Amino acid sequence: MFDAAIPPASARERIAARGGRVTRTRLVVLELLQCSEHPLSHDEIGDALAAAGVAHDRVTLYRTLDWLVEQGLARRIAGGERAWRFEAVRDAAHRHAHFHCDRCGQVVCLEGLEPAPATGLPSGFHVDRAELVLHGSCAACGLGSEAGRVR
Image 1: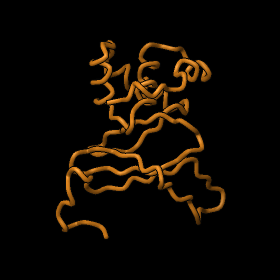
Image 2: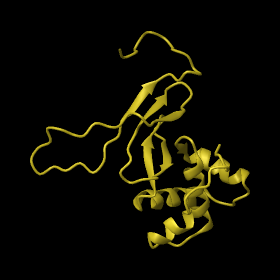
Image 3: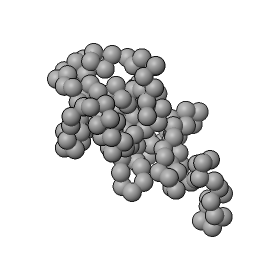
Image 4: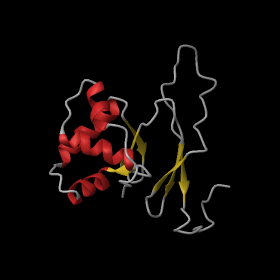
């Protein structure tokens, strides 16, 4: 699920810099997100914590993820089935799009593609963030049916 060979920036220091308590769950979840190659769902994070022997409950994990997002240490990405996926924020200025496979649910980062800036906003409006999630079938799931595919 994640590559332990890639040393993450100090999750402990990043959490402490936000004035937060450095709890075991916050620390392990942020380290997991920093090492992951793609955004993770709540269930994938929970499974990884269980596999690593880190005791947790669903509510604590939800609260941890919410806190990391509120502090700018993680981002939420809309996934399928009304489920969020999460990724670590490595650089606050860095933005990229995502691809969501509607067949298997995998979400992949598209580093070479950025969400377009909002244009034509009414006077007084300000954009804080923009998301671009493309939907379709990943290479492993094949091209799928021709019906309903956007060209």
